[in-house]
Amino acid sequence: MSDAMAIVLTAGLTATACCLLGPFLVLRRVALMGDAVSHAVLPGIVAAFLIFQTRAPLVVVVGAAVFAIVCVLAIEALRGTGLVASDAAIGLVFPALFALGVLGIHRYADDIHLDLDSTIYGEIAFTPFRTMEIGGVPFVRSVVVMGVVAAVNLLLVSVLWKELKVTSFDPEFARTIRVSPRLLSRLLLIAVAITAVTAFESVGAILVVTLLIVPAAAAYLLTDRLVAMVAISVAIGWISAVGGYAGAIRIDASIAGAMGLCAAALFAVALIGSPRYGLVARAVRRSRRRRAIAAALAAGPEGSPA
Image 1 (cartoon, rainbow, N blue to C red):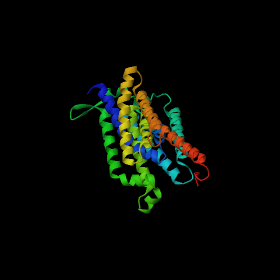
Image 2 (cartoon, rainbow, N blue to C red; image 1 turned 30 degrees about the vertical axis):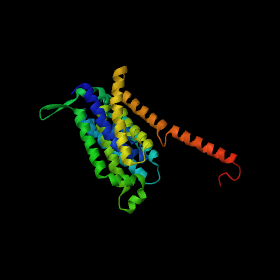
Image 3 (tube, helix red, strand yellow; image 1 turned 45 degrees about the vertical axis):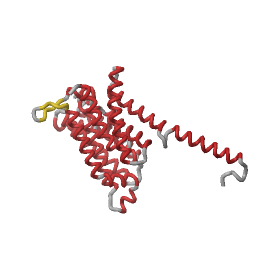
Protein backbone atom coordinates (compact mmCIF):
# COMPACT_ATOMS: atom_id res chain seq x y z
CA MET A 1 0.00 0.00 0.00
CA SER A 2 1.39 3.41 -0.97
CA ASP A 3 1.83 6.18 1.58
CA ALA A 4 -0.84 8.27 -0.13
CA MET A 5 -3.33 5.39 -0.07
CA ALA A 6 -2.60 4.74 3.63
CA ILE A 7 -3.21 8.37 4.56
CA VAL A 8 -6.40 8.73 2.50
CA LEU A 9 -7.77 5.39 3.75
CA THR A 10 -7.02 6.35 7.35
CA ALA A 11 -8.74 9.71 6.95
CA GLY A 12 -11.68 8.16 5.09
CA LEU A 13 -12.24 5.45 7.68
CA THR A 14 -11.92 8.02 10.47
CA ALA A 15 -14.48 10.16 8.63
CA THR A 16 -16.80 7.14 8.36
CA ALA A 17 -16.51 6.35 12.08
CA CYS A 18 -17.08 9.99 13.08
CA CYS A 19 -19.82 10.75 10.53
CA LEU A 20 -21.92 7.76 11.60
CA LEU A 21 -22.22 9.37 15.04
CA GLY A 22 -21.91 13.08 14.21
CA PRO A 23 -25.50 13.58 12.96
CA PHE A 24 -26.89 12.39 16.31
CA LEU A 25 -24.61 14.83 18.16
CA VAL A 26 -25.82 17.70 15.97
CA LEU A 27 -29.49 16.75 16.39
CA ARG A 28 -29.07 16.44 20.17
CA ARG A 29 -27.20 19.78 20.33
CA VAL A 30 -24.04 18.29 21.87
CA ALA A 31 -21.82 18.78 18.83
CA LEU A 32 -18.88 20.00 20.93
CA MET A 33 -18.57 16.67 22.72
CA GLY A 34 -15.55 15.70 20.61
CA ASP A 35 -13.76 18.91 21.52
CA ALA A 36 -14.56 18.32 25.18
CA VAL A 37 -13.14 14.80 25.01
CA SER A 38 -9.93 16.04 23.36
CA HIS A 39 -9.23 18.14 26.48
CA ALA A 40 -10.67 15.81 29.11
CA VAL A 41 -8.34 12.91 28.28
CA LEU A 42 -5.27 14.68 29.68
CA PRO A 43 -5.59 13.34 33.28
CA GLY A 44 -6.02 9.84 31.85
CA ILE A 45 -2.71 10.15 30.00
CA VAL A 46 -0.98 11.30 33.17
CA ALA A 47 -2.59 8.55 35.27
CA ALA A 48 -1.62 5.86 32.77
CA PHE A 49 2.00 6.99 32.89
CA LEU A 50 2.08 7.16 36.69
CA ILE A 51 0.52 3.71 37.12
CA PHE A 52 2.33 1.76 34.41
CA GLN A 53 5.50 3.90 34.06
CA THR A 54 5.38 3.70 30.29
CA ARG A 55 4.50 5.95 27.38
CA ALA A 56 3.43 3.09 25.10
CA PRO A 57 0.61 4.29 22.80
CA LEU A 58 -1.80 1.48 23.74
CA VAL A 59 -1.50 2.17 27.48
CA VAL A 60 -1.87 5.90 26.94
CA VAL A 61 -4.92 5.44 24.71
CA VAL A 62 -6.58 3.17 27.28
CA GLY A 63 -5.96 5.73 30.04
CA ALA A 64 -7.32 8.49 27.82
CA ALA A 65 -10.38 6.41 26.92
CA VAL A 66 -11.24 5.89 30.59
CA PHE A 67 -11.29 9.63 31.26
CA ALA A 68 -13.12 10.28 28.00
CA ILE A 69 -15.91 8.03 29.25
CA VAL A 70 -15.79 9.74 32.66
CA CYS A 71 -16.15 13.06 30.83
CA VAL A 72 -19.23 12.08 28.81
CA LEU A 73 -20.91 10.40 31.80
CA ALA A 74 -20.31 13.49 33.95
CA ILE A 75 -21.74 15.73 31.23
CA GLU A 76 -24.75 13.46 30.83
CA ALA A 77 -25.28 13.40 34.61
CA LEU A 78 -25.24 17.21 34.76
CA ARG A 79 -27.69 17.41 31.84
CA GLY A 80 -29.90 14.84 33.55
CA THR A 81 -30.40 17.10 36.58
CA GLY A 82 -32.36 19.48 34.39
CA LEU A 83 -30.57 22.38 36.06
CA VAL A 84 -27.76 22.78 33.52
CA ALA A 85 -28.09 23.12 29.73
CA SER A 86 -26.08 20.87 27.41
CA ASP A 87 -23.53 23.49 26.36
CA ALA A 88 -23.05 24.62 29.95
CA ALA A 89 -22.53 21.01 31.10
CA ILE A 90 -19.83 20.53 28.47
CA GLY A 91 -18.24 23.84 29.45
CA LEU A 92 -18.22 22.84 33.12
CA VAL A 93 -16.81 19.32 32.86
CA PHE A 94 -14.00 19.40 30.33
CA PRO A 95 -12.15 22.46 31.73
CA ALA A 96 -12.21 20.79 35.16
CA LEU A 97 -10.72 17.56 33.80
CA PHE A 98 -8.20 19.44 31.67
CA ALA A 99 -7.16 21.47 34.72
CA LEU A 100 -6.79 18.22 36.68
CA GLY A 101 -4.47 16.91 33.96
CA VAL A 102 -2.39 20.10 34.00
CA LEU A 103 -2.05 19.86 37.80
CA GLY A 104 -1.08 16.18 37.48
CA ILE A 105 1.67 16.98 34.98
CA HIS A 106 2.94 19.86 37.13
CA ARG A 107 2.90 17.78 40.34
CA TYR A 108 4.05 14.34 39.19
CA ALA A 109 5.42 14.49 35.64
CA ASP A 110 6.90 17.95 35.24
CA ASP A 111 10.31 16.53 34.31
CA ILE A 112 8.91 13.80 32.03
CA HIS A 113 8.35 14.32 28.31
CA LEU A 114 4.99 12.63 27.73
CA ASP A 115 5.21 13.39 24.01
CA LEU A 116 1.49 14.05 23.68
CA ASP A 117 1.87 14.93 20.00
CA SER A 118 2.99 11.42 19.07
CA THR A 119 0.92 9.42 21.54
CA ILE A 120 -2.56 10.90 21.65
CA TYR A 121 -2.60 14.03 19.50
CA GLY A 122 -1.25 12.25 16.44
CA GLU A 123 -0.20 13.42 12.99
CA ILE A 124 -1.83 11.80 9.98
CA ALA A 125 1.29 12.22 7.83
CA PHE A 126 3.04 9.60 10.03
CA THR A 127 0.41 6.89 9.58
CA PRO A 128 2.27 4.95 6.84
CA PHE A 129 5.19 4.42 9.24
CA ARG A 130 3.10 2.83 12.02
CA THR A 131 2.53 -0.79 11.05
CA MET A 132 1.33 -4.00 12.68
CA GLU A 133 1.47 -7.63 11.61
CA ILE A 134 -1.59 -9.86 11.27
CA GLY A 135 -0.78 -13.46 10.40
CA GLY A 136 2.75 -12.40 9.43
CA VAL A 137 1.44 -9.79 6.96
CA PRO A 138 2.24 -6.13 7.68
CA PHE A 139 -0.65 -3.65 7.69
CA VAL A 140 -0.87 0.06 8.37
CA ARG A 141 -2.04 0.14 12.00
CA SER A 142 -4.35 3.13 11.70
CA VAL A 143 -6.17 1.62 8.71
CA VAL A 144 -6.86 -1.57 10.68
CA VAL A 145 -7.83 0.24 13.89
CA MET A 146 -10.09 2.82 12.27
CA GLY A 147 -11.62 0.16 10.03
CA VAL A 148 -12.61 -1.82 13.13
CA VAL A 149 -13.96 1.30 14.88
CA ALA A 150 -15.98 2.29 11.79
CA ALA A 151 -17.42 -1.25 11.56
CA VAL A 152 -18.38 -1.25 15.26
CA ASN A 153 -20.04 2.16 14.92
CA LEU A 154 -21.93 0.99 11.83
CA LEU A 155 -23.15 -2.06 13.77
CA LEU A 156 -24.17 0.11 16.75
CA VAL A 157 -26.10 2.59 14.60
CA SER A 158 -27.74 -0.19 12.57
CA VAL A 159 -28.88 -2.17 15.61
CA LEU A 160 -30.10 0.88 17.56
CA TRP A 161 -31.33 2.91 14.58
CA LYS A 162 -34.97 3.23 15.62
CA GLU A 163 -34.06 3.94 19.25
CA LEU A 164 -31.46 6.57 18.34
CA LYS A 165 -33.89 8.18 15.91
CA VAL A 166 -36.83 8.45 18.28
CA THR A 167 -34.73 9.66 21.22
CA SER A 168 -33.07 12.30 19.01
CA PHE A 169 -36.31 13.79 17.68
CA ASP A 170 -38.89 13.15 20.43
CA PRO A 171 -37.53 12.04 23.84
CA GLU A 172 -40.97 12.33 25.48
CA PHE A 173 -42.55 9.96 22.97
CA ALA A 174 -39.56 7.61 23.41
CA ARG A 175 -40.35 7.35 27.14
CA THR A 176 -43.97 6.44 26.42
CA ILE A 177 -42.83 3.44 24.34
CA ARG A 178 -40.29 2.44 27.03
CA VAL A 179 -37.17 3.58 25.21
CA SER A 180 -34.83 5.33 27.65
CA PRO A 181 -33.39 8.57 26.17
CA ARG A 182 -30.79 8.70 28.95
CA LEU A 183 -29.52 5.17 28.29
CA LEU A 184 -29.33 5.78 24.52
CA SER A 185 -27.58 9.10 25.11
CA ARG A 186 -24.97 7.46 27.33
CA LEU A 187 -24.34 4.68 24.81
CA LEU A 188 -23.95 7.23 22.02
CA LEU A 189 -21.59 9.45 24.00
CA ILE A 190 -19.45 6.50 25.11
CA ALA A 191 -19.18 5.45 21.45
CA VAL A 192 -18.16 9.02 20.59
CA ALA A 193 -15.55 9.04 23.36
CA ILE A 194 -13.99 5.73 22.25
CA THR A 195 -14.06 6.78 18.60
CA ALA A 196 -12.46 10.13 19.35
CA VAL A 197 -9.69 8.75 21.56
CA THR A 198 -8.89 5.98 19.10
CA ALA A 199 -8.78 8.41 16.19
CA PHE A 200 -6.68 11.00 18.06
CA GLU A 201 -3.63 8.74 17.86
CA SER A 202 -4.11 8.24 14.12
CA VAL A 203 -5.10 11.63 12.74
CA GLY A 204 -4.89 14.21 15.52
CA ALA A 205 -7.47 15.94 17.69
CA ILE A 206 -8.31 18.83 15.38
CA LEU A 207 -9.25 16.58 12.46
CA VAL A 208 -11.34 14.32 14.70
CA VAL A 209 -13.32 17.26 16.09
CA THR A 210 -13.78 18.57 12.54
CA LEU A 211 -15.05 15.24 11.20
CA LEU A 212 -17.47 14.79 14.10
CA ILE A 213 -19.15 18.15 13.58
CA VAL A 214 -18.66 19.76 10.16
CA PRO A 215 -19.93 17.03 7.76
CA ALA A 216 -23.00 16.45 9.96
CA ALA A 217 -23.71 20.18 10.18
CA ALA A 218 -23.47 20.47 6.39
CA ALA A 219 -25.72 17.45 5.86
CA TYR A 220 -28.26 18.94 8.30
CA LEU A 221 -28.72 21.81 5.83
CA LEU A 222 -29.21 19.52 2.85
CA THR A 223 -31.87 17.02 3.92
CA ASP A 224 -34.71 16.41 6.36
CA ARG A 225 -34.29 12.61 6.37
CA LEU A 226 -31.99 11.10 9.00
CA VAL A 227 -30.73 8.23 6.86
CA ALA A 228 -29.84 10.66 4.09
CA MET A 229 -28.18 12.95 6.63
CA VAL A 230 -25.91 10.14 7.81
CA ALA A 231 -25.08 9.07 4.23
CA ILE A 232 -24.33 12.65 3.14
CA SER A 233 -22.16 13.16 6.23
CA VAL A 234 -20.06 10.12 5.37
CA ALA A 235 -19.79 11.25 1.74
CA ILE A 236 -18.64 14.74 2.80
CA GLY A 237 -16.09 13.13 5.11
CA TRP A 238 -14.60 11.08 2.28
CA ILE A 239 -14.60 14.05 -0.12
CA SER A 240 -12.79 16.07 2.55
CA ALA A 241 -10.23 13.28 2.99
CA VAL A 242 -9.48 12.89 -0.71
CA GLY A 243 -9.75 16.57 -1.62
CA GLY A 244 -7.81 17.72 1.43
CA TYR A 245 -4.95 15.31 0.74
CA ALA A 246 -4.76 16.36 -2.93
CA GLY A 247 -4.78 20.03 -1.93
CA ALA A 248 -2.13 19.57 0.75
CA ILE A 249 0.21 17.79 -1.65
CA ARG A 250 -0.34 20.46 -4.30
CA ILE A 251 0.53 23.41 -2.02
CA ASP A 252 2.88 21.49 0.34
CA ALA A 253 0.78 22.19 3.45
CA SER A 254 -0.48 20.32 6.53
CA ILE A 255 -2.58 17.34 5.45
CA ALA A 256 -4.91 17.44 8.46
CA GLY A 257 -5.30 21.20 8.09
CA ALA A 258 -6.15 20.89 4.40
CA MET A 259 -8.72 18.15 5.10
CA GLY A 260 -10.33 20.28 7.81
CA LEU A 261 -10.39 23.30 5.50
CA CYS A 262 -11.94 21.22 2.72
CA ALA A 263 -14.70 20.10 5.11
CA ALA A 264 -15.31 23.71 6.13
CA ALA A 265 -15.50 24.76 2.46
CA LEU A 266 -18.11 22.07 1.80
CA PHE A 267 -20.12 23.35 4.77
CA ALA A 268 -19.93 26.88 3.33
CA VAL A 269 -21.24 25.58 0.00
CA ALA A 270 -24.16 23.88 1.79
CA LEU A 271 -24.86 27.00 3.86
CA ILE A 272 -25.05 29.17 0.76
CA GLY A 273 -26.52 26.78 -1.78
CA SER A 274 -28.83 24.41 0.13
CA PRO A 275 -32.04 24.23 -1.95
CA ARG A 276 -34.31 24.61 1.09
CA TYR A 277 -32.30 26.09 3.97
CA GLY A 278 -29.40 27.87 2.20
CA LEU A 279 -28.82 31.61 2.32
CA VAL A 280 -29.62 32.02 -1.39
CA ALA A 281 -32.89 30.08 -1.08
CA ARG A 282 -33.93 32.13 1.96
CA ALA A 283 -33.11 35.39 0.15
CA VAL A 284 -35.19 34.30 -2.85
CA ARG A 285 -38.15 33.41 -0.59
CA ARG A 286 -37.93 36.77 1.21
CA SER A 287 -37.82 38.59 -2.11
CA ARG A 288 -40.89 36.72 -3.37
CA ARG A 289 -42.80 37.50 -0.17
CA ARG A 290 -41.93 41.20 -0.45
CA ARG A 291 -43.09 41.27 -4.08
CA ALA A 292 -46.31 39.44 -3.16
CA ILE A 293 -47.03 41.91 -0.34
CA ALA A 294 -46.23 44.87 -2.58
CA ALA A 295 -48.54 43.49 -5.29
CA ALA A 296 -51.33 42.95 -2.73
CA LEU A 297 -50.97 46.48 -1.37
CA ALA A 298 -50.95 47.91 -4.91
CA ALA A 299 -54.20 46.04 -5.69
CA GLY A 300 -55.99 47.99 -2.96
CA PRO A 301 -58.10 46.94 0.10
CA GLU A 302 -59.91 44.14 -1.73
CA GLY A 303 -56.62 42.48 -2.81
CA SER A 304 -54.75 42.93 0.51
CA PRO A 305 -54.15 39.95 2.79
CA ALA A 306 -56.82 39.25 5.42
